[in-house]
Length: 46
Image (cartoon, rainbow, N blue to C red):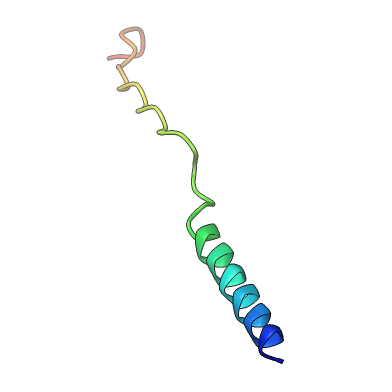
């Protein structure tokens, strides 16, 4: 039946689309803040 082949093709295309859409989605969802520059402690300076 041609309908069965069409359904398999559509299912394969949807699975491929979902798989490709999921790629790269594991990173952080925000921009991390830059760490504050370290300032030397004047009490420990010799």
